[in-house]
Image (cartoon, rainbow, N blue to C red; front, side):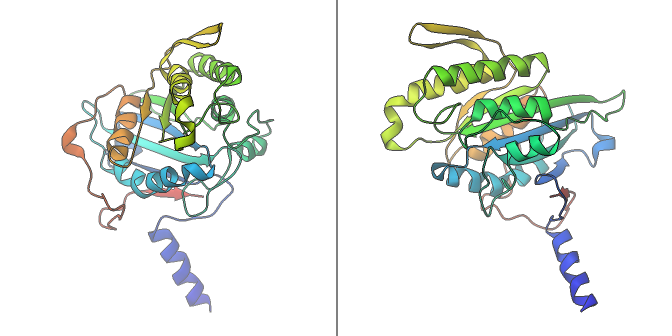
Length: 277
């Protein structure tokens, strides 16, 4: 029996799974390890976990390790430490196996996100409560980024309205104050939401990139977090994720790095990641 348990634990290690109280997490990059990297990035992927997002969360979970492990950003050797969370619910079979709201509560905070489509409040929660860990040396640069993933709005989902702009503005200003880059990665909305897509795209874009966000006569001037707004689909997801990672290092992705795992399958050869769960 003991031998059987040892074999199970060894298999879990090989496939990158270990169990503790924190969210799904891994480290990888084009440096051999963190100590040899020029730049270190803490990045959190936080997704709306409504039914319309199942394809995006599954696709991201299938390819993200390969994107990061095969990254080749110009002018630096990068080390990436990535975490994955749903906002107030999880999604089975994906990396999004813990919630932002539970994570904040576990660190002694009171989450402002209280709806599974609260993308703006989730950014606010993560800026305030995520364990940003600048343990770099004097010779290394350190960056922080949040990728907020959705397909409807930034406060309570569909439809976009003044509350979405208000929540996005709070998140935007807090991220800038704390030097956290925000990336808005939006998927394809349901066909019945298409009439609202322009406002959805606008509020996600200004939250990340800045500009004037307006609902009716109320406008706000958002700042640039140095992140990006990206509307993705199954054809561009891998390159979009690579763009996010390299932009986080103030770089531009190199086309030649695209990826060894279109199917989402990862060879065990050269396995360099450390996982925590």
